[in-house]
Amino acid sequence: MIIGGGPGGNAAATWAARLGAEVTMIEREIVGGAAHLLDCIPSKAMIATGGAMSATKRFAGMGIEQHDVEIDVDSLADRIGGIVARMQHNTTQLLQSQGVHIVMGEASFAGPNEVVVRSSSGETRVQGDTFVVATGSRPRIPTWVTPDGERILTTRDCYPPRVFPRSIVVVGSGVTGVEFVHMFSSFGAEVTLVVSRQQVLPGKDAEAAAALEDRFLDRGIRLLKGARAQSIVREGDEVVVSCDDGRTVRATHAVLAIGSEPNVEGLDLDAAGVVLDSRGYVAIDEHCRTNVAHIYAAGDVSGKLPLSSVASMQGRKIAEHAMGQVRSDMRVLDYDKAASAIFTQPEIADVGLAEAEAFSSGRKIRVTKVPFSSTAKALIHNDPHGFVKLISDPNTGVVLGGTIVGRHAGELISVVALAVTAHLKVADILESLLVHPSLAEALTEAAE
Image (cartoon, rainbow, N blue to C red; front, side, top):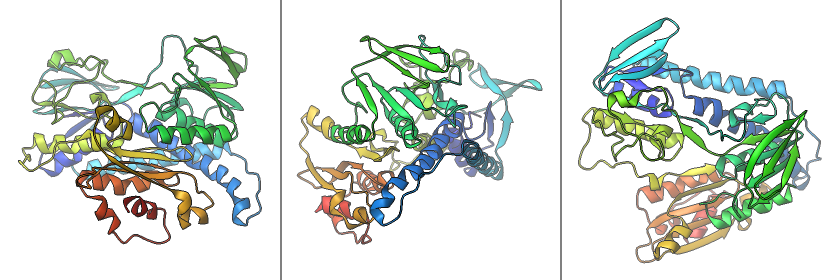
């Protein structure tokens, strides 16, 4: 019995069905997951369109006459809706092909082995042997602001917004915040980013964050560092964002990008005996089990890395564990080895041990860095910004982590992620015969 049809629930359902389980999935909103299909995928589609627009600025350096382009908001909305519909259809078909029974409704526990499903047709009680809670998350909205969906926006109001912003204030300088800064700047909006600390992307590689800040400033983006938003009010067709240091910003729009909250309300987890951690997420062990042995949790609601890839892997691991497919040589999920990417310009991607983390813990590492400007492919694309950084063990040569800043960083990090997961050495990357010319050559140069 799986509650929630996002990446975690879908993976758990399909893998468990393949292993012989009778699977029922309960989803209250959209098969495929609200955070995934109504937030993650639309934002990347918007970024891709904005990137296509901003790419025209490189044309002059590539022997092409530059022309101004304009956004067609209706076509963009249709494009996003088409992508979401296609992915929802594909996900539903896959589940049905595996024999998964899909029930649209809202579930709550009536006991450790029973849930109540509420839908337009009434209430139904369903019993199961094993349960997976995969209800995802929603944008966090602080008490000092009330989004109206028109000028004061949450992230899910932006695909695209009802009125396209001439100017916008982005509150929150984490991964989601900087992606929105890049996205709206690409569409020609005047953007201000409220940065509560002295660096965007706190917790990420400092050089990567600095490179992104430099590009933001080059594009005319205003950074309000050391400021925390404390109120957002609407005044006619404008909004006013007030910060705790007395500074205010006026714009046509404001968007909140200050994290998410787990969807645990209404589940009646107490009735099943499931406990939450101190942050309000469902507490799980290395097998994604809750404190109740037959109840698991996956995805954002589990409080681990809020990545679709992590949720999917959790779902697979849950299915294998619940179906008795655990062997002594099977790996538990290592969240420290999850690759992640930030779809800004330049892109930023990382995996494994971070340089700052190693230094703070006193661990000896070797750091090698190669700029993309040294590779032919970057020059061919007239986009030489960024670098590849590899982190390895100086004694064994094993790759411990890496950061990539630049074009297609989200794709290139896969090579480093494989090396980190498989405990490969820098020599293994160096001895690989990669394509020339390619951006991946920077990896072999860093390994050398």
